[in-house]
Picture 1 (cartoon, rainbow, N blue to C red):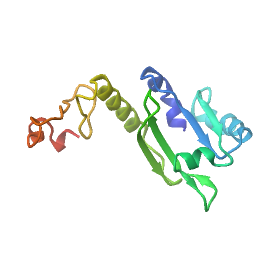
Picture 2: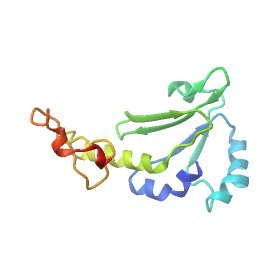
Picture 3: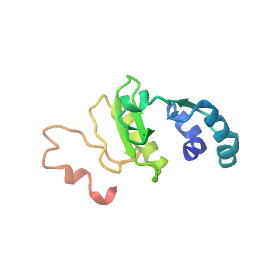
Length: 150
């Protein structure tokens, strides 16, 4: 969460809103932010932290671990229409890499801007070649994209 907070301005510039959800109470969030997170990120967490003590949000998004009564680490990219475009779920001991989240947001935004006429290959970044799906691309992807471009 501190990595997201540190790059929050970048996400905001992309039009992204962040909401952190956990099973912890809002009291725990307050203390965690004041005692821990504010020491990692100047000013603490700049986005909302929501409490899901009953696990309703976790169940809805498929990250609730019924046995342990916890939510796994989940990251969801939801488009302006409310459709989940990407999700990543990790067990608690491993964190995510924010740079990949930013890259994926940029890729989904590029697809959206093209009206769905372009696709972004693996590892795509702004300014790199895109794919234009259709009969002309079949059997010719290798001419546009190479694994070394990832």
